[in-house]
Length: 302
Figure 1: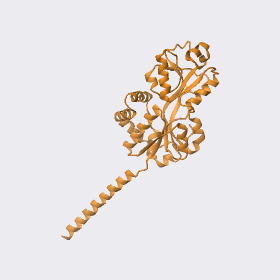
Figure 2: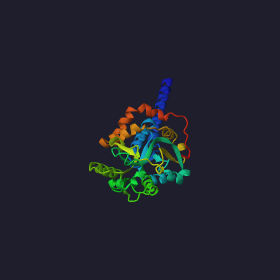
Figure 3: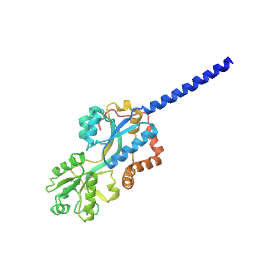
Figure 4: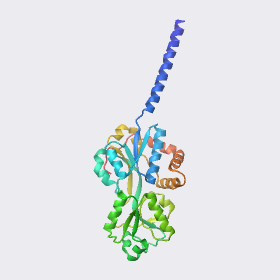
C-alpha cells in the first residue's frame, strides 16, 4: 500500500513536471523576441519580405514584425537598432551611399538576387533611332519623347541616378516627371495607348518586364553602373542575436523569373496569396536555406 501511494506520488510529480515544461514552452514561444524587418513599398521588396516572413514563422516559429518606410529611413533605423534588418538593399550602386554612411553599425548578410537600373523604352522603338542614352540628344528623338523621363519618388536612389544621367549626358530639354511607382507606370501605360514614345527610369526585377516588351538603353558612361546586387542587411549584432534568422538570409535566394512572375501575378490577386502559394510549392527548397552551418556576414564591404 505504501509502495502504491509512493508510485502515485511519483506519477503526480511526473505529470506536474510535464505540465510545467509544456507551459514554459508555450510561454517561451509567446514571449520570443520578434525580429523587426523593414521593407519599402516596392513590388519586389514586398514579395521578398513577405516570403521571408512566412518562411521564418513556419520553419523557426520566429515572430516577425514588419515595418514599412522609405529606404533612407530604414538604414537610419537599423543604425539605431529600431529595425533589425532589411532584405532589399541595392548596395552596388543605388544604396551604396547609405551603406557608406552607416556601415560601421551594419552587417552585410549576403546577396538575395541581382538586378539592374537604367532608362528603358518600348522594344518596338527602332534601335536605329534610339539605342543609347546619348541618342536622346537627337532633336527629333527629344521631340518624340516630349522631353520627359518618367521616374519614381523624388530623392530615392533611382531618382538621383537619373539626375546624374541628365547631367553626364547633357540631356538638355529633358525633365524628370516623378510620381509613385504606380503613378509612374500608369502614365507610362497611358503614353503607350496614345501612341506616344515614353521614357522610363526603370529597374529590374519588376513586373513591368512581364507586362510590356521593354529594352534598356545602352549606358556607355555607366552612370547607372552594371548589374546591381540586392543584399539582406542587418544592424550590428544581428547575427549574434538572431543566428538562425541570419543563417536563412545568408542563403535566401529567389530566381529572377520566379520573382517577376510572382510580382505580376500579385497584381491580379494579392501579394499575400501569391507568396503563400509559392511557399507551399517550394517549401522543401526554402527549408534548405535554414540548414547552413556557418554565416559569413559581420559588416563586410560589398
